Amino acid sequence: MTRNRGYFYMVIAALLWSTAGVFLKMIDWHPLVTSSFRSAIAAMILWAFLRKEKLYHLQINCHTLLAGFCLGITTVLFVIANKITTAANAIMLQSVSPIFVLIFNAARTKTRPLTSDLWAVSMVLLGVFLFFLSDLAFGNILGNLSALLSGVLLAGAYVCTADASNLHAAMSGVLLGHLLSAVIGLPFLLMTPILFTPSSVVAILFLGIFQLGISYVLFSYAVQTCGSLAVGHL
Image (cartoon, rainbow, N blue to C red; front, side):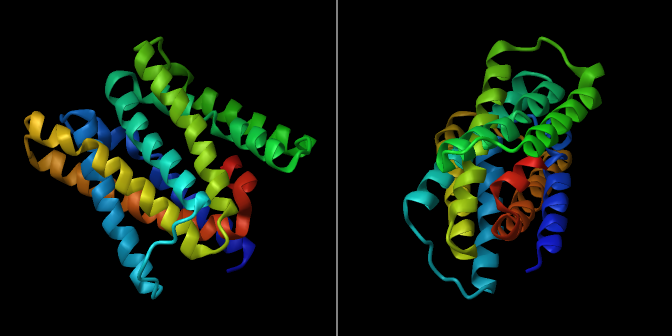
């Protein structure tokens, strides 16, 4: 895959990720139930793509396990944040992830970030802040902290996935993350009522298939050519 195609895939993935706030607000379920359903559907999409690539088992190593842990907890925290604070707050606070991508990369390589990287991240964060400025609010402290922590863990998932040796390892880490998120929500499926309305069914299917499933397939392809720092800028 060429580097330009990798960037294109990453842009499409980012656009799909950006739809989360709207569709999550359409589902009146417990946050962990929503997270579990969304990730279970996404896991099926990822497994289908692994089979399409004739990859019939998961690669289990320190990179895929750490990527899976970071991504699994990230998806849970982001859904919680969207439910108990404003969507603008959740997206804005999770968007700190490029800062932590820089920090994690600097710690990993023992080098200072390039000035161009610092400028790129600053411009991205300024753009996100200005875009959501009119919608930002103090919101719920727990929701804001959940969104902020999800941004930190998302950066960890970026770096670990980029460190994966190949596409198989990258997609294995992502799939493990969605399986973890799905399992975390299982107990709440039994403890809370679930009302399947037409809007909630459409929303959860879109979130699972497109916003989380196909987007992370594209992300796995892109990160193998772009690297974690380039992905973090997006």
